[in-house]
Length: 186
Length: 99
Image 1: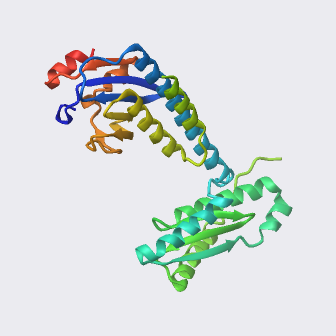
Image 2: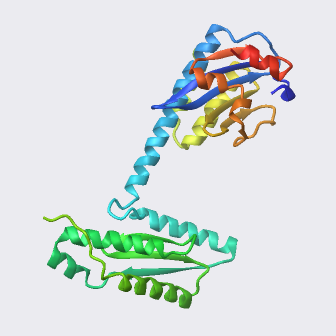
Image 3: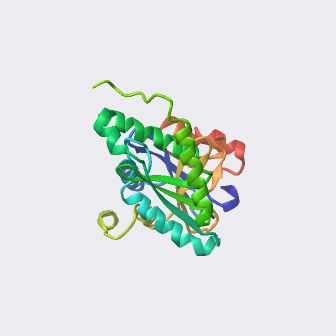
């Protein structure tokens, strides 16, 4: 601060909901006398306003995250995969690498729901999502497109490479299917 | 000051600004009203990060990360109380004057 030639410092804590990590600081070069009472009151007003603004912003982000995340699988859903795909598309000319999209549907999922109930169907979806996520390469992502459909984005992949990744994920799912699925008894 | 408060209200309800733009505009306005050279809204964590900055001097960019103990605001963060003080010539003196 001395290097900048600053002479006076005023700092105020900023409360962002329960969060007390924020501090607002005012510094000036030209006067060594402290701010007067009116200035200090104005600073307090600004600090309160900023605390509210940061809190509202955090709440908005939280709500958005909840709205765009599938509560069952924890995967992105709704408008988020669509907007993420747009971002991927916009980035493609810049980074010079394309990406492949794959839409995957779970075979016979309706039969699972009909025969074992929706609680078991939900567990199947959760297990499938976990397996898909754990089998992804770094940077690639998967979203729940709707129902039992999952959208995959695979960076730098040709159609053939994407098909090979999908085959690998499918064969992993088949290899593990003998494990029992735990579901609450209705 | 009533003009400044009026401007504060206008800015807080002005449409078309993102949250970050509104916060930066608020800091710029406060810098003008209070005639200060630098306004920093910083966040303490493992380090101190200057999240939003209004800087007439062009010397303290947003995103600056500093050690918590090296920041003047450290005392305010610890005590959760406002503080106003002159900045002395030496670091040692700054520490004494702070609290």
